[in-house]
Structure formats: C-alpha cells, structure tokens
Length: 429
Image 1: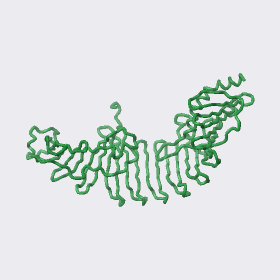
Image 2: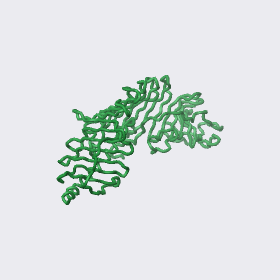
Image 3: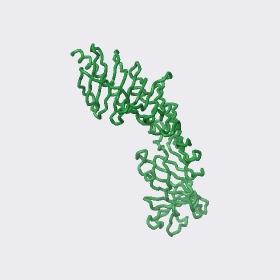
Image 4: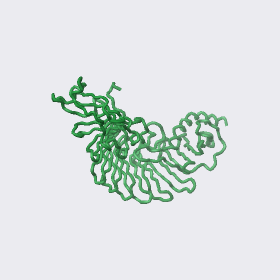
C-alpha cells in the first residue's frame, strides 16, 4: 500500500497539470470564426467498476472526487476517474509507459458520451466518437488521416445522414496549450438536415488569419459571402434571387497623416440592384450618403453614442445621434451644413463669395427653439481665419429651418464587422 501511495502521489503534480489542461479542452472544444461553429459533444465507454485503490485528491474546485486505479503489480496508473462538480464524469487511461492513451467523457448537459484515442505522444487525437448517452446512437465520429489532418463527421440525430464535415489542420485536435491547442479548421461544410447533400455553408481557411465562407439557402441560391484577411474583411449579402446584392461591406485601413484608420465601408442596394445608400463607419461616427426625396443628395454624419459598446450593438441605429448634414447646394447657397445637438438645429453654415472675390464660409448660430440667428462668423476659406468684419456678408434676420426629413435616419442592416483602433506609427502610440 505504501508503494502504491508513493507512486500515485509522486506523479500528482504531473497529473494535476495534465487534468488542468486536458479537461477544459475536452469539455469545451468550440471553434471560433465566421458563423456559429458549435462546441463538441461527447462519447464512449466507461470502466464497469472502479475498484480498490482510491485516493481523495483536491486538485481543483470543479473536480468533486477522484479515483486512481493502479495495475495489479502497482507499477503504473491504469486509469484516473473524475467526477466533476457539474455531474460530468471523465476517465484517463494510460499505457504501461505511463502515457495517456484514451479518454472517455460523460456529459450531463448534452446527455452524450465521448471517446478519444490518442497517439504515442499522449496528446494527439487519432480518433473520436460521440454517442447519445441513453440510446447509444452515433452523433459524430472522426479520425486522423494519412495527411495528418483530422476529419470529423456529424450526423443528423437518429440517422447516418451527414450534417457536417470538419477538416482540422495537423496542429488541430491536440490536447495541449499554446498554438497546438487551437482547433485549426481548414474546411467546414454544413448541410441542411432535412435536405440531403444541400450545402448550408462552406468555410475554407488557408491559415489561421485568412479564410472564406459561402452561405446558401435551401434552394441552393447564394445568401452571403465573407472573406477574412487578418484584420481586413470583405463580404456581401444577396436578395432571395441569389444574384442581386443587397449589401456590400469592407473593413479596410484608410491612411491619414501616416496613421491607418480601420473603417467599415458599406453600400446598400434595392431589389433591382440600384444603389440606395453608402455608409462609412468609423470608431466614432457613421457617415451616410443618400438621396432623400425632395431634397437630393445629402451627407449625414452621426456621432457614435457609446464607442466601446459590445460589438453586436455598436453599429445599430440606437447608438448614433445626428451631428450635422451637408448638401452641395440649398436654396441657391453652396456647400451647406445643418448642425444638430440633442436633435435640435443649432447651426447653419454655407459658402459664398465676397465682392473682393474672396471665398468665405458663413457660420450662423441658431436658437434651438425658434431657429433665429443669434450670432454670426465669417471665415476666409483660404486662411481659415475669421474676418474682423462679419457684416461684409448680409444675413437674413428671419429664422432658419432645415428641409423636412433632413435629419431622418433610414433603416439599415449593420455590417458584420466593426471599426478598429487606428494603427499608429512606431513611437507615436
């Protein structure tokens, strides 16, 4: 008994480290990327009876109890059986050299069993099988091929119809931390469960930073396309005909004064393919170029209310407030700007030419309630300096009102990409 105890507890630190890295990977093997790559399920057989040599071990808060089984001659651990605080059960099986050879898991939440067979290194998954805990029906199975890639097939419940095929790079499906622990999906193809062989989406990655995805409707027509190139993204969505684009978006770096600003540029189209609006999303604003009925072409600039809001909610309508609207011309005036604050019109700008042929910008401050002019500035467009005598420009004393509908926000679909922080030059962070 003393020899057993010595063998077990001498290897306790190693086993503890092994469990702390393996169980999180086995228990939650999700895939992150465009679309929803769901988490793994589970798999197979358990030892019918765990006997005799049992050692209570307090390794982690999520492990409720542990049993360690030695071989008959007390030379090595045959298996370790853990019960987790959430009711899950897991067993690690070792070979005579003390290397991890198999893993079985029983998941309470998904009511499934999982079985993994490992390679000689004790970390590379060679086979995986997932079954239903109650019926034993096969849910998914996979194995590593001659090219060292791992192919995992998922089945429609209760059938042998394939619903999904994932191909992992050689560095994927490995039970260890760091880069080796990342599930590098080279290809992911999903099928509609009620339509055999009809592709729902196809995901292909050339490496961890570059990938493409195509989405399809049940009738086989295209619905969306996305291309990821590190931080840059490019994609579009289709109308039901699978040909006419309804939105095109691109996240790209725009250089200004040696600084790269990551913006999202989007074009929106009507069902006939005509351009309806252009939107540019920056870290702090949304700039909309649109043709408004009865007004003409306008450029609306909307300030972002909460720039650090969760990505899914950052570009929605409710997170923007109108700052100003620009028109090339209005009522005979050129380069007009209507400025808003808290929804009220507060300033009116326009450009004109003095008798001296100087081009100037007139900036009028307005009473938010009445639209009456409360102050006036005249700025030289060349020097950007304010003129000492603003009375060189005659301004109507009446109230100024913006065209009806100028401050309206048209409905839109936010793009599936948000602006990034600027790329600052070295030494200028």
